[in-house]
Length: 291
Image (cartoon, rainbow, N blue to C red; front, side):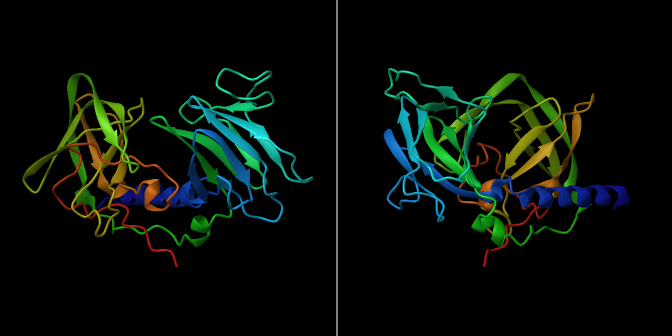
């Protein structure tokens, strides 16, 4: 086993673990609420739509009005000393609009756009998410229970045999691939081709999505899922092919999607054809249980 290869892998794992304990990361998510058409109240009232605990939070802080796929935010009076803010500054409704957003409301952009509005309520932050037209609100809290209970990732021992050479076979034109998610819906993404590799005398292939200039994303499953690895599959980022059309697939760098740790995420699942009929005992294992 190459010392430099193993050192690079361990360095990558350290960075992975640091990202997991980041108070601005996925483990700090504390709630996910799907909005109903019309008014959705938020505050400390347990009967409200979006509930924040804490003595400093009044029963009702305001209203999130969902109408026509857009969300308007209207503040009520808030106690002195409670930080309330929206960044970047959103559009303000001056005289009401055709969708029923009243004057004084802020129209919030969702994460489906280039820049999402983030709303600060004390130590918490929330923002609007759009999943194929299903509109919700996701909350981040640096004191979240999931983050507080995290005890570190678990890994298979480094195994150089799971660093395999793959051949990139391009499609004549990039193809639309349907990517399912844990909500039971799906979205379309582009795939430029397939990655083909051999293992134990068998040939396997995976279809990358999420392609950028610097990397491609593999959302894949294998026969360890639901046993020693997370049941919903894992992610693996790979470099673009070299001039000869080849690249390394290092399954030692396979990692869990956010939904392996948090119930407040909406992770993609392996698209059709990306579940390998072979065990891949490399990379990140199923997350440890929280006690």
